[in-house]
Amino acid sequence: MNIRDTHARHSGESGRPASRRANERLHALIPGGAHTYAKGDDQYPEDLAPVISHGRGAHVWDVDGNRYVEYGSGLRSVSLGHAHPRVIEAVRREIERGSNFVRPSVVEIDAAERFLATVPTAEMVKFAKNGSDVTTAAVRLARAVTGRPRVAVCGDQPFFSVDDWFIGTTPMSAGIPAATTELTVTFPYGDLAATEELLTRHRDEIACLILEPAGHSEPPPGYLAGLRELADRHGCLLVFDEMITGLRWSEAGAQGLYGVVPDLSTFGKALGNGFAVSALAGRRELMERGGLRHPGDRVFLLSTTHGAETHSLAAAMAVQATYTEEGVTARLHALGERLAAGVRAVAAAAGVADHVVVRGRASNLVFATLDEERQPSQPYRTLFLRQLLLGGVLAPSFVVSSALDDADIDHTVEVVAGACAVYRKALDAGDPTPWLAGRPVKPVFRRRA
Image 1 (cartoon, rainbow, N blue to C red):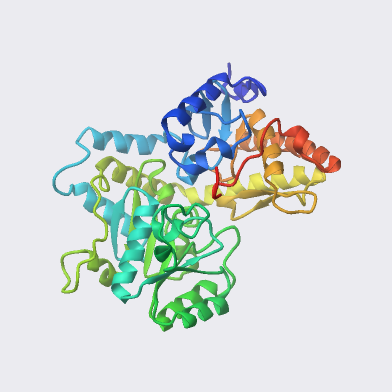
Image 2: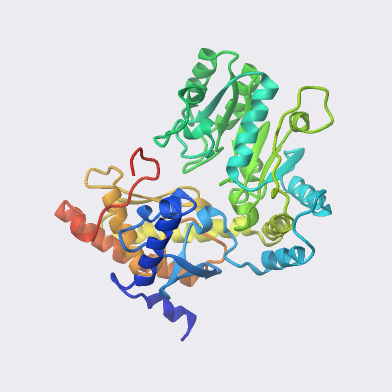
């Protein structure tokens, strides 16, 4: 059978018994049934949460043998596609030489030089394993440098860290002392006046402003430069969380695209194409506070047993080389533009253009599912996801990988067209419930399970 023929080889609404059994086993062994809350089966329609067997390129197969075109791969981390040959070869080469030693490997020098060449706005870098490692290190460093206790996070953005300083501000704050949460304040994205008011109200208390420099819309003109000026004037650090924007916006992240240099920045996700690697980067005089060549109090910046595993650093180097040599960022934008245009066209044809809405930069597309009043709706999201899954499209978002091709995009648009036809029926009925076949999907951050 030609691999394209398997797009249609899906076993229907009740044909995923192996995934259902695997999900039960997951919940019996692992709190939440997954190691990331965003991967939980509560994020998918009931009995249609696939458990993955393997992936290659832009496709994954579940344990029932169903094949899907996949978007948002690895929570946006797999931007080159699964098992990318150049990355896998680099990883295999280093694993055969040993992965972890009692002293630094020469690979750490090579990886740091490669990263700083790719992100020239930074002067030093330290690697770790996940995004929370490095965002928390940035916060600790900012507090040490400024001597201030408070952290200001962008309140319009969903996630910065699993650590107390951020999670205490979410509905899942159980176990976090109120005294910790009170040290984190929020500011709105795009509003310089509100941010200045916050800095003035907490004068000489805020150690840093931390935000994703861009999200589902472009920064307002002058906004990032205005934040830079505010941080300088109020004596705090400006920290860019480039977990998502890194590589997808440009090889050097949003700071490379928009030309505004933060004091510190954090990278991850696409950096390793699925291998565990993250980075804290920034100005030398700040980063050295976590080193051995300064006279002040030492900052316990990052100290990870596995942070410099050679194969993950090799993966990062291969990813950066692939992006710069093969124009991957431009390809991601082209694929995203093709997908967005197709989805918008079929949504309009079905009369749901105001309800199925594609948003974001072309390399980082998401979709909104809106109800009869054009308000965000979990039941309508469930309806939409259900139709996508039944059509062989696994898409919690429309974030593309460079492994997609035109046929994948065309198939996705065809499936979306069918989903939009069902969506129209539900809107006309004023109730999506008959098309859900179970409970609605749930938001990740909620107080009760």
